Image 1 (tube, each protein chain N blue to C red):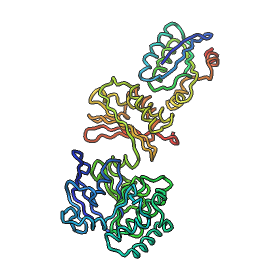
Image 2: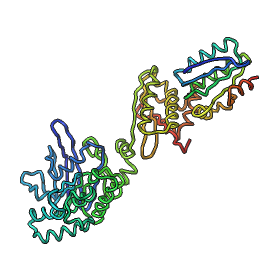
Image 3: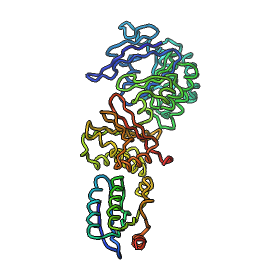
Image 4: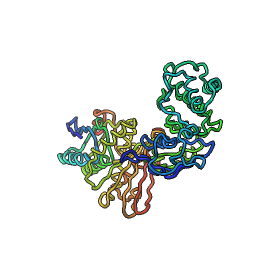
Length: 366
Length: 111
């Protein structure tokens, strides 16, 4: 239905979309997720030409919509959009907001347009608000009116640009339930959203956008339960990380501790977890000492908000050397503490790089 | 880390506070050598103000134990609690060192 190839969009020197290629089929519900500023909304606005792409192509049912002869108004009827900020006409009643487009653009009779509008308002649970004005409605009600207005144009595709971002949490559900209903009825939809549970439930496919490209795509199961790429995993599990490099054995342990403590405070980690983490870092640094004498060492500390997993990874290039195999008696105490503090401790040597992965025990495991 | 010493009966009480880790363990070892060097062979090590201990600190305690053994001396710990206690438990040090609740009990235990 929609075929996008190598779509690029720049604002001045800033390239926001760096080559998006994707196909959206009829009846699909495609959710677009990703960090702020990754190009999700820009992509949606390019689809219905609210932004003019810098390069690439968009075909809708085989028609090149970037062709200068393309009828933009007709395209927007087929591919209508629901905005984060509702964009209702505040000087028009709810029903007039719904009938304006069908009467002006589709030449519909006012009476028929009103009947259709009331039917759609009933669908979104707002028939009794037909003669109210937008300012008399709550945010959730305004967004449901915006969805009904979009449906009034009988679009083949609806583009939702963060439809719940401007709503109080209590109003999010009422809007999402309307979108869920449309999904069940087979409406083709592309939804930019930060509501992960919703995206998981409603989508047939999920696109994870990052740094202006589709970094990963798949079914909700694939993206939410088995993400393949590190950046997707970090986003899905809300993983925050801290990376530090050590070039010599004369590093400043207290400066490192201060950074780790600040990290723990930011992630709201408990005092016992923080103490165990500081100990794990000091003890594993002791075990990794041989790396400091040669090529240096890198530490990545990460914590997942969703799984509560705290992981410490040490990487060092060089010959294969497993710090967990240390026979040095000096290291026996450190090794014992590391094993006691960790739910798992694994070493691997891949492409000439040693990687020691330590997963801190959670409260229930210790 | 701060180290203070005083005598209580026949024992020398060494009061530690702060962190006993890679950075401070050498200073602890040096001070303990000095204390034992003066002839003190009954040591009470008060750890109640220690907020953090790592294996480096534990190694310092082993050095102390070895030096005392050479002089037929002995040590007793006090205030092994919280985070410090869990490190002692993980490393098995609680079976290696005698520990008492109070300095008085530790002094009495050393005879």
